[in-house]
Image 1 (tube, helix red, strand yellow):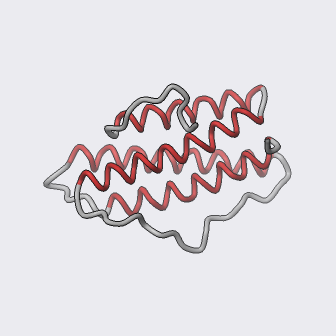
Image 2: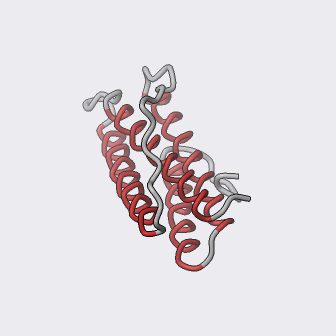
Image 3: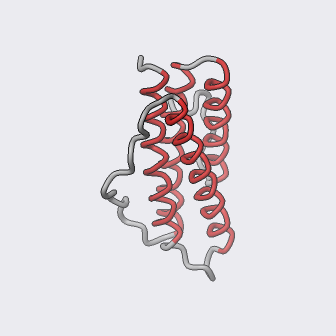
Length: 139
């Protein structure tokens, strides 16, 4: 099991990746064909940016330097259909849930409450994107 700070940094790294992915996915959705998907992806992008910013503050408050975003990411392929974009978004949320679950497991108090709320949000977003609910999201 990782320390709370290690789990926090791993979660921050996952949020950097999610922010990047949602920006890329937003550019792949034709506005006329799936306007509701565009709204959903924008909301997810905004949520992940807010979580990323919160995690940066939490790491700094712990006296550490926040892990930086990777120099580059690779978009999943293909992303030619609405279904492929939805599947990529579902995988991103599952990955986020996985790191939040690890943070929940390694933390206590306010950190655990924050991580649990983020885990719940990711699990709800998976279902909102058409994914199946899971008993233990992220596991």
